[in-house]
Length: 261
Image 1 (cartoon, helix red, strand yellow):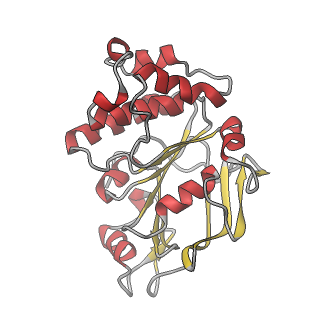
Image 2: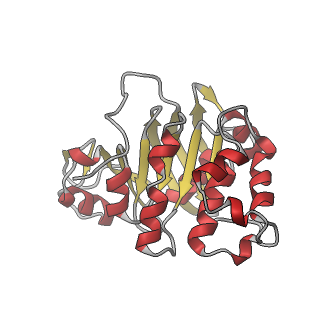
């Protein structure tokens, strides 16, 4: 069903990330409802779901930008629920936010230097980013606002990489980009993973998520409706989980009796 970027799940090891019974509210709106998941080293773990499912809220909570009303976030076995975003970045949790969020008036290189502010020691440097994305070196002095959407997304990824994350959070990489550009950006994942990263991505494009992920997790109204490997679930199960169709949703790839929370 897919051509994933990695192998099978290392379920017998220690998770790099564990989310336990996480509930998050936006005012009176419950965005996440006692959500739990485990991400293992080396995975490309994809969170899928329609608009309003809670996907971006989950990533932002893991990054420390939202505070949960209940539940916890553990990173490499340590509870980081109370840590500020910059502390999490220093520990190795770094996010590429939805919409890129570059500093438009700064140059490409200046944006990369911003990413290095909380850098850990590791293989990624600005020079290595230039080697990986070969167009960037010649345009390093160009303002970010003058770049195309795909180029901005690539710089946003480079900005995250120079922080040398252990866990890279990618929020809606394909949003607003042409399919060919999306394919090129996702084509970078194998090279990025080779440096020892684990990727947790949010993606509304289900077909794209299934192509790159080693594990998928579908949300509906802040609850889990499907979890498993792309090869272990059917297109019908994915559709049922995505839209909340009764009778065929599943968890861990096994059919259930309606949506499972």
